[in-house]
Length: 363
View 1 (cartoon, rainbow, N blue to C red):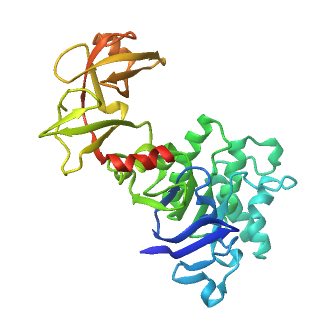
View 2 (cartoon, one colour; view 1 turned 60 degrees about the vertical axis):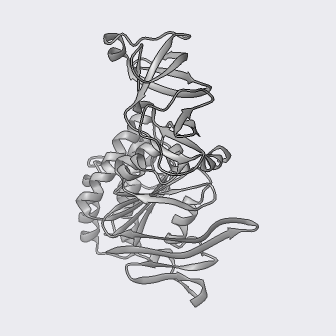
View 3 (tube, helix red, strand yellow; view 1 turned 90 degrees about the horizontal axis):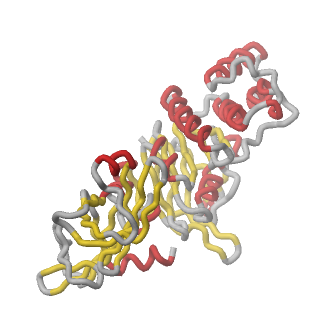
């Protein structure tokens, strides 16, 4: 059952069109992520849902209530939409203690003192801040301040939580820790989370479903993390979701040849009549060997990255990357040097029409 329905939303600033006829829905109880490059309109869409911005056209429904519809003259203020919001910069009050920050929404709602205190301490403990309730934000780490912001957003029992790049100001270790805590809180409280980020790793880790947005604010694909990563709808999604190899393949009679050479592809050919194709695959999909069956190539770059060996390989004018764990490379005799010949094969790959790759290059 959906909790948010976005229908035909349009939003522009002057001559800059951010969204045009955007439609999507978010199911109750799921963690739904808007993922895309910086400047694609993710935060704008979140602000439209929250009520901090008004669309030029379209309609947004939250829990069966139309909260904005310019054509009908409807715009419900943010504080009446029944949601919690956490921003990138935390936005905690610097002159208030942890307790006072978390209690603020209940204080504004004029809740009884006993109820307020009990509820605040319950939420403070839930986000791992018990014992720190009398500290000021200046006495807290970035991760602790983020927990305060989460607690404040959760205090009013909102069924919908909007998170706008909440972990981007944290270091790598804290980001990893907090993304799991957010997911655990979402499960424990059974709240719906709308998460905005440009970080693919975080999105894959916490999401039940994702919407991939391009630079023009269009939704390119919606699906669960596995579908998005393993079965991308187009080269843009495939390229955005991680390091991507694109190798050109051309048709010559009944054969399909790699790059500008004469090597026939050693895998199932694409289905279709296009004269030129692109084979897309991740570095982890490439198997490298000193000899045997496969495509013959030359190691153009060998990079030791500690736990991994990273290779750039040329095959008939086409370049691709592959990586292998260093201990495995040593054990199996796969420590190649630049200029050495090798043979490659593939665990998995996807086929794209060559014409569709031009958009990825443009982006």
